[in-house]
Image (tube, rainbow, N blue to C red; front, side, top):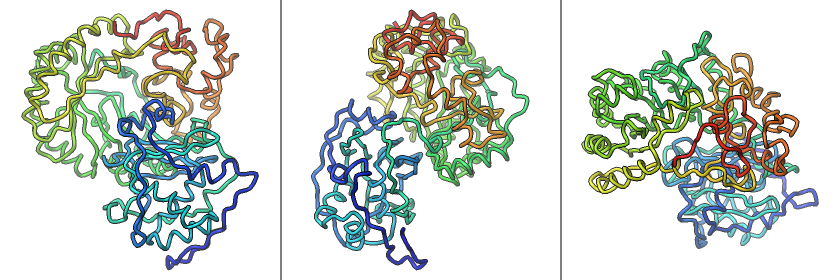
Length: 563
């Protein structure tokens, strides 16, 4: 075991030596590579790596400076996950790092990284590494060098598949800035025999947590996917939420998201957000449709929040907003005034617009773009076509939904106007380009973002009940616990959670084509079926039907595709 005195003297380590019980030999782990294409990187799980995809190339090794202090990038964290180590980025990670990153790495790779959580130069660290791993100085320099300021993600090939790492794993201490910390992680605490790098579900607890603070809202959006009608008789107390936030921090949860309804309608939103900021697990962004006031801005700033404030604004035509959101005639004016206050505040913010038949017109979007062009500090503007809701009648949504041809036309018309503004405008085509009933091979082969439900994420409703997805709400099949009486860890390991993660053929209704499908075991083991889409397509009682992306899926009762 490692021994360490309080004066920060050099720790002593028990040596690592390879034996028959080790799952991987060290030579494999030290063979660092790059040059991965987009599809290969996507296989590392989790939709997190996309920002780094276009530039993945093998970088040239350079000799590190021995007198410099190199540290584990403080934007990255190591977390024990029973049979592997989770490597993930902080919420609001610096843009020079890999944002929203999450992969599993070998314990011995975590051991190597743990040596760089101390305040000491490489010339002091290197002999400790050589002694621990029983490797030469040349071998250790080569291995370590691959991780120092690596400009692109890298990986090692192993018996259990590729092990991925984000960019800039190890950096010079002087470049770490205010986030620098010397955690002094104990190398031997990462060494154990059993290894599992393939199970997607985290063993130790969720990595992402979402609180739905309230389902009350200031608008009545006809396209909203949320359940804003259910009456909450016994809301989760703020005191209990603070306890859960502490538990989330102790579990090394990567990020806690806050959503509504409208989060600013919760009486203690400020207390909750301030606590999340204090513990370093604040949301990457908070979204609102509430007109911004000076008082609201002051309250946000007092929490210390450094993330993004997302303003949801679909148009500035009062008639359109009244018809689609159910707001009064002054709403557009109040929103524009609030945007100017936000622009002057120094807070990070972006605009999001949902595209429906109400605003899918170039003149409507052009007018909004013109107003946004006066703002100096806007981060970006995102235009996203509306998606179905479980809690809205399909015939209502079908009337709201523009055709794919309409969306393509308006996107083509607005593109020339985008050269007139300095901020990025993101035209979201993911919804319209999503393919259904065409994918062979089950959930492992589905294109797009992988489902985080029950693998990394769980969702806490305003009354304390816990579900697996932010669109399923109080559907009884997916309630896995209640944090009014259970801890986060207890809910994560509850019988219903474990049951949903390991469904058998006998758990599937005979009416579902999945029950007799020869791909059942492989498909369900990968846990990438979207229960929300399944229910949207086939109805609440058909939760165990095929994902509509599957080529064996029956015709959809409610069509999700854009034609």
